[in-house]
Length: 403
Image 1 (cartoon, rainbow, N blue to C red):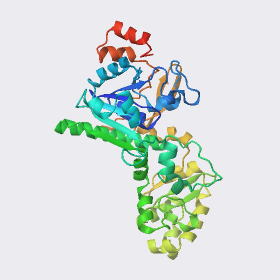
Image 2 (image 1 turned 180 degrees about the horizontal axis):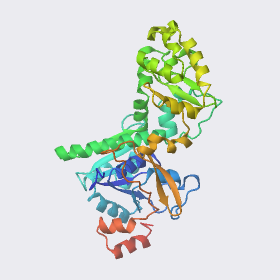
Image 3 (image 1 turned 30 degrees about the vertical axis):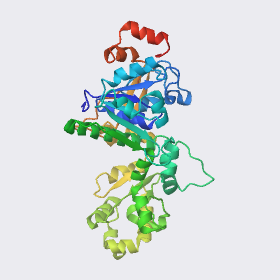
Image 4 (image 1 turned 180 degrees about the vertical axis):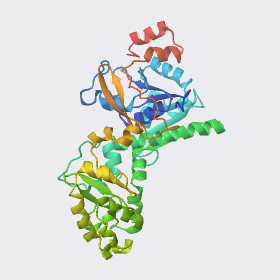
């Protein structure tokens, strides 16, 4: 469903966090116009060997910009600013990832755009938030979300013998989804009250939200708090442990509350009903006191069958469990497939997986859109929205204002 049909978003962003917010809004039906400099495109297009040819952008760019229209404007020129302002007059949201000094210098800060369109919702994503002594500093997912946001240390226990690899996209995707939600809320508020607000979200803020249980636990419970960490198995409980299968894979249990009927049902599924009558495991308190012994027995049981066999056996069990899957297995997960969480977009003779935003409307995953080529929609956007005729567009191209 196109929940945001009729909403126009100007997306003057780069890299991943804020473009991700624009991609979510596009998936929800908004007309999102991604603006790039004609000579300095979004670096994510060229990431890892991507290029400006048709369908040549890096797959990162395609992920964070699907469903958008792409135009080019040189905002360092008066003509480029005029073209931007013509689009601002006809838009509902302005989304940007640029820092305050650049916004002011190039003429697209809040006050400058509100002078043109007082009803526009102005949304900005930053590294560390819009306030404070470091609000002029940029940020990236790997540095601001993982490192400064406490996740790298609490989850991975960083040491000098390790280097981060592939820590890209986790915080960007989370933060983009949060920012898209904030923009949608601002649109609803404007509909109700007529007031256009400024929306802010940050990588550091979403890291704090994501790791809230560990942060609060550390304050309330002190330095020994274990929330958000992997701990030695012997310190845990049977009900929240992982068990190795015959073929070296793992099944993870999470029997929160250790309900008696769930334990008994698990014993039946494991083919060992004798555990139900074993006095060592007769109650939740008994199982907690003898957790090590129970885990040893369950280790031996899980080692008798393969990963695939246990998945088939446990699918009818009452307690919560999960197969510990690889990223390669995710597209084939039956729940992923049934809910169309991962789709495929076509780029010429090639296709690319598309991970959908984790929100459905009327149980509909929505369309699966491709990302635009460089400057693909410049002519149609300037003509249809900005009101420029073909001669004016040709003059802008000749002057290098557009690509």
